[in-house]
Image (cartoon, rainbow, N blue to C red):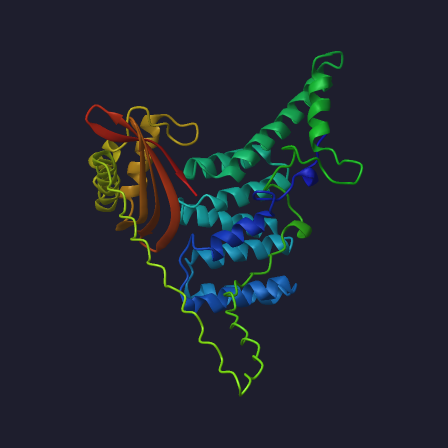
Length: 368
């Protein structure tokens, strides 16, 4: 049977803490420059293995900002690294309660639950991650692998109850093959690894933060000195090189009426979200809209209404909006800055729309 230790800890083949680091340090949550040093200091301590000092510094920061989601993420990483899964579960659980919009805490809970063979809880946590962000690829992969683990347990139980069932053994053998180490001690790469679902110190190292250095401008080397001209013959004057006439800049293509209509729909959608105008917000979605996760449209609308109306204030600002129209279908890509109470999230979003009668409606949305 597959053991919890066979479950790996990756996001796009990267350890889960790397995914967590991305959340904390790569602009999903806004960080002021004054606070960046605090995060850098804690991460440096973790990288050097000084977990007790890192945890103390994190606690010191949280004493003044107890709801700060980023430092609490890092605190959960430290607790996992230090072999304190119960404390880490409590930390990530509290984050999901305070910031239900963030999918990463649910994924990290699945990591911890899976390490304790609590696969039903891991499955529930991953379903919440996907419900929060349907384009969270790591959570989708993890959920499929959790189902495989649950299937392995069910097949094993079936064999215990009916050892003569010839149809079960091949299925169980196939799952074991998927997760078994290869000859070099590495698990196969063809979708067999449970990304984001392993525990253990080796899988929870916080990676170094790579500083991006601007390219260095190299000055042109001086031309080689020419030999002195003979005093008897004056140097020939250089032939002037004609300066080419620059081509006129191409005028930007005029946007079509359909593109303008789609842009207006997107901006009205963001404005309705900010104003908590639920009728206009939900009315932006078409009948064909497929809610994230496995919920029906009614449940999804009730959940959105609860989350939006539960905020004291919301601000949704869009930038870098580009619209592509192809017949009766359109796609809008933009950067979304979401602010609600103490939560600030900046992310890339894509909305797919279709023409329904004389208006454009949203039928799919994804983040990333």
